[in-house]
Amino acid sequence: MYDLGVRPEVVIEPTCGVGAFVLAATQTFPTAKKIMGFEVNSDYLETSRLRLQHELESGRVYLAQADFFATRWQAILEQASGALLVLGNFPWVTNSVQSGIGGVNLPRKANFQHHNGLDAITGKANFDISEWMLLEVFRWMEGRQGDVAMLVKTAVARKVLAHAQRQGLALASSCIIKIDAKKAFDVSVDACLLVVRFNSALVATDEYQVFDNLESTQGQRVGHRLGLSIADLDAFDAHVALVGKSPEKWRSGVKHDAAAVMELTRHGQTLKNGYGETVDLESDYLYPLMKGSDIGSGKGWRKKYLLVTQRYVGESTDSIRTRTPKTWGYLQKHADILGARASSIYIKNPQFSVFGVGAYSFRPWRIAICGLYKSLDFRLIAPIEGKPVMFDDTVYYLSFDDEAAAQKVFALLHSEAAKELLSSLIFWDEKRPVKASILNLLDWSRLQSNKTQALQGQLLFGFSA
Image (cartoon, rainbow, N blue to C red; front, side):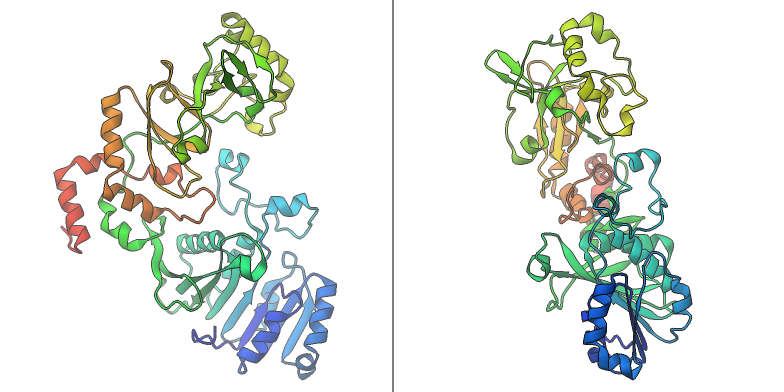
């Protein structure tokens, strides 16, 4: 931090643990007038006081017990005049994990990410506690000059920078410096040192640099364009003419949350479910199934089937009783399991419901990709046994009525321009790097337009029309 030109007058570590960073700050920033550490754990705080006894006696260091989520930070900040540095290492757990282990040190409930109702229900509202804490620290910096330096998950760093850009916060400069979390902390997660400089007198920037390590001198330009988080600004700017709306919407596979019941495997002439039970069903509601691992690894069909009880979300399932009595009997046998599915999306829908189905689900040809794999490997999937192939909800796909249309789009998606644009939007270190929201930004129809291709060429060579 000192090498980056940081010269604080006041240093605050909101969760100082046993005081390692506070001690380092006393040595690194000799001109800092006040260095304050706060910690909720009384045992940790006592350890800090012992190792910082001399500095405490001098009055330059101040330590206090404090719960981050209950402390009136504004009152503390009002006493901290001059350039401020907030540093530390916030907890690397999510709000749901913290609750699950009995933790009470949690932020007040609020939809600060502004997710809609369905996204909140299906899990997007689960967030890292450090994300909420960092955004709170960013609010401290409004209207003042200073820096934030925090060890966080890389995904959290990107989220808070995107949020700051959307809110128009005065970020004068920012950078992400990758660290080896396995080596440093023995945890398998992509982590970084996030450094943000605030200065309301300067024009806020929508770009930041990503460095591979602390020794790197050349970083990759990352940032925001058109309200989007961009992993590679150079590639994005070169192919921005392709950004728009996908002519066909990318869909996710079927969500059912009951694999042992709804997914079947053929062994010779018999079908077995996930419990190893031999199952005898009519074929009406059975469809070939390829899972995300099949799509992502390039495997073929493994004689798996999915029981698809509806052709569109909310459709009544009563007709299964009369149309296919054996299927109805099977569903009734496992009604307790299907009725106990945890997600609340099943509660107000017909018995045995699934999600992620519509007219698009039953078109014969598909182009598919698994969201969990770290590559842009699209697969062209033909019908199997005269039926369209279904996928699990880790797969995104386009569907077509005929092979010629599917082949044409498949070729476009494999073009260099399409892959470079999509790659510029993907952060490959994320758990699910390929997302429908990203795929749907590529207007592949523009790849067929000579005018657009000419515009792309101008952009590639730095010219504008």
